[in-house]
Structures are given as structure tokens and as C-alpha cells.
Image (cartoon, rainbow, N blue to C red; front, top):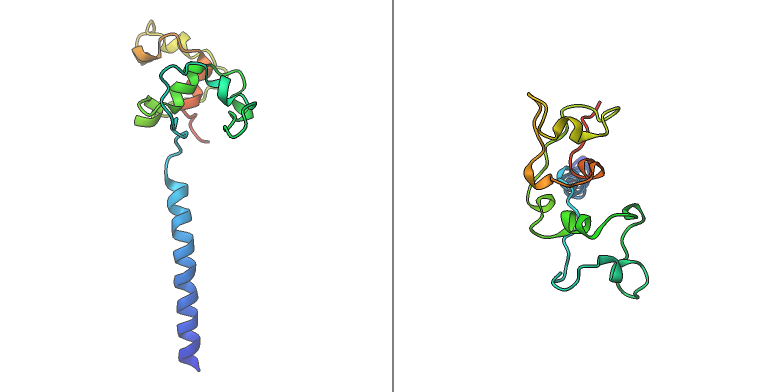
Amino acid sequence: MKAVRVVLALGLSLGALAVASPVRAQAAAPTKPPVIAHDTAGRGQCLMCHGGTMEGIKAVPKNHAGRTNAQCLMCHAKDSPMQTATAPAMAHSPAGKEQCMMCHGGAMEGIKAAPANHKGWDVKNCTLCHAAPKG
């Protein structure tokens, strides 16, 4: 009887581990936006189809309101930096420093300038990729 309890307890423990392990693995993986599932050639106006009016086509999330087509591609194109790289975290809190390019525009000595491929991006884009430090 004692052996049956031990086997049962061992089986339940292994079952719990099998269920919990994939969840832990998913939580640890970095989050990337979904990649565009179709060719974008000739389809430069994302909201024409993804604006929420075409049946059977997924609409953009509500928190994407006001974003441009360039921002769609910046995050969702398969060859975008958002898909192919991991942006470094901010070295400081952005509180009170919301105008990133005032310091990272390349004119301040000793402050790392934003990469050339970021030229012309609105400061709202910075925090889409670069996370503020925790704590």
C-alpha cells in the first residue's frame, strides 16, 4: 500500500513538472511581434485591410491607434530589427527625459548617439524597442 502511494505521488509530481515546464519556457522567451504573413509589395496602406472593417482580416489592436505604416513595418516585417535583433535596454529611467534625441542625437560628448537607421524616428518609437530599467 505504501509503495502504491509513493508511485502515485511520483507520478503526480512528474505530471506537474511536465505541465509547468513548457509554461516556464514560454515566459522566459523574449516577446517579438507577429511577422506579417503576406507579401507587402503593393500593399503600403496597412489599415486599408487591417482597419477593422474587412471581414476575416485581423484588425490592429486598439493600443496601435495613430501608428503609421512605417511603424507597422518597423515591428512586423520579417527583416526588421525588431524581428532580427534585441534592442539594448535603456541605461536610465526615461522619467523626465522623454526627448531622447536631445541627448542621443549625436551632439553630446560621451553619450551614445542613436544609430543612423533611427534618423527621423519619433521619440515615441524609442520605448517600443528599448525597455526602461526595472526598479
